[in-house]
Image 1 (cartoon, rainbow, N blue to C red):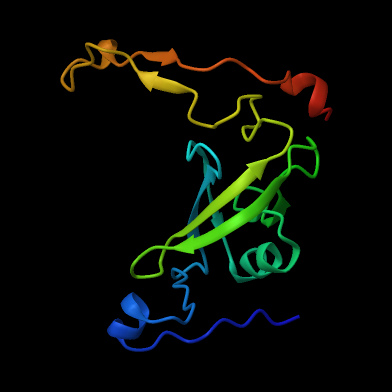
Image 2: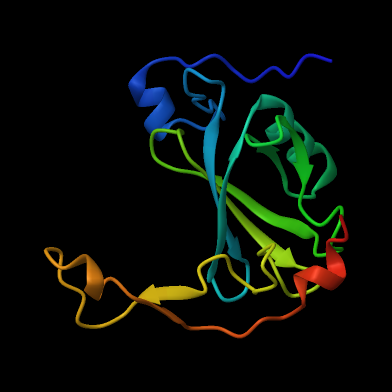
Length: 151
């Protein structure tokens, strides 16, 4: 099945026009930031290719391209934590996708957290002192990944 998006045209059309013209990189990927549609919390970052973007639009379920597994990845297909797309946005030059989703099941991260961004760099980190580059947890686990992802 072909996944066809409008060819990119003039800069003014891309940046200010009303036609979706996503820009895929040399590997056929486009970055995708996913947020909670109610809180705007960043849940995750992943890549899409034309097929996963088309499937996301067609099904309303966030679908990404797994670079490590070289296959489509429907978020929630194993964990049950589907992402139901409420809004698909594109940045000014149409080279980044923003999905605003309902995070069914409450967790976006395969490590069991609501967001993949569950740690922060601790206060006091100094660029010249790698020993000071400590991470602190800023969230609690929603589920135990060992009980969800049985290999």
